Image (cartoon, rainbow, N blue to C red; front, side, top):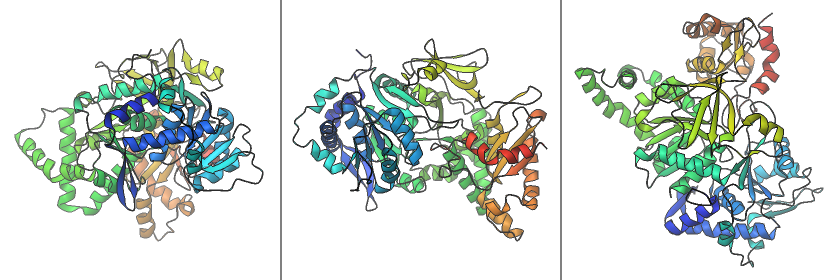
Length: 595
């Protein structure tokens, strides 16, 4: 028997339906307006789909792939699959046909649910070569490919397939055990082919309990979550999906990242989860706006940042005049910023990758509580998170409730507790490398501060060891480069080399202005090898070098012909650089910097 409140996630959902019944639950845009489905509405749809899946031959332990944008359909399908004891295999909407084939074949999925015609095409083509697939259910009616052996139906037909069934889905849901596999989540692949991480119901309950404990002092009740990170990622799957259900919260599904600011103003979220890259983008947009405004408004904004940082570093450091001025700036500047985020935010949570401390301090100075956490898919996914009353922007906070963390002799972070994954699907060798004596070896390097906060210093595998034997943390250097207004993204290089070099993506707004001033074509692909552009960026790199030690100095650099994006597969769906893909494209150019 589980020590948690429920034996499994499906039973959690049905009990919460009984608790909240006709109250609004999930919201999505229809005809330009957010409209809700209540808990009973969603439950009814979960039961219909679960019966349909049973009618299609899905049995406990079978794998069913889910390909959809964040939406009520994603939540309904997730709980429908789990309620009959099957295993959910989430897939990114950005997956190519090759990506889908790998996941379908590796997981042995017997079916798939997909939300749209656009997303279905690569999936249908991939499934032709995946021998286990029996059916694919789509939101849009589609014809199956001529040489496909599987059945294609729309989701309405799937639901109707179980229409005559009177199978008690609630009773089936009760049969699930805490240590049953709930989902197989394929890692986003920064370093090669994704592996399937088996996460149990117990794993997810550990994260939910830890999140409740970490946010307890914020008086968590009647919360509104804005969901926009991919639900196929373990971070959003727990923090923006299972956790809201566990506390009876409402979930609003954002239209897009581009429309995020509009959605925030419309639905006034209380909690949001995001990856560091989003905060970097917001920082860049805010600073561009401030520079364009100039004058008194820019002066007041920068004073707000300066006083906010001073107050964070030492709350008692402001003198009487500074306290009065800071109070005035709170009304004139900070309140306007809070209103742009909806006006009711209790916390912004950052995870998925290290947050640059300067970015965290920037938002903190603007009066937004940003809680950085840390973990990975293999730890389902949270290991530690900052608490509201003891926030340290340069750390990822103390360990989660009932989580043990220690630092190995080589500096690697190890963690144990109910967060430890069941293992990699059909890959015992890889599992044995990562889990040793019950401890997950994270591959991250870090340290524990005197007050018990965990600080991440770098990735063990990504550490650059130069030809002199010095260890250099690339993410720190990349973060410092990206903070410069002229630079949008950067990747540093130099393993086994005498010095550090960098690949730079110029900021598009800055590049446009520079090209106009210098009578150049503004296209990055054309300008990447332009000598004048290289010279223009030299002072920027010099500014960064002045903040670095001699061995960290960036001695040479080259310019990328395009930005790192999800679409060109140079970034993962959670906006982390795929170093191996970048090196495939630019490795020769970087090597050339050492000749």
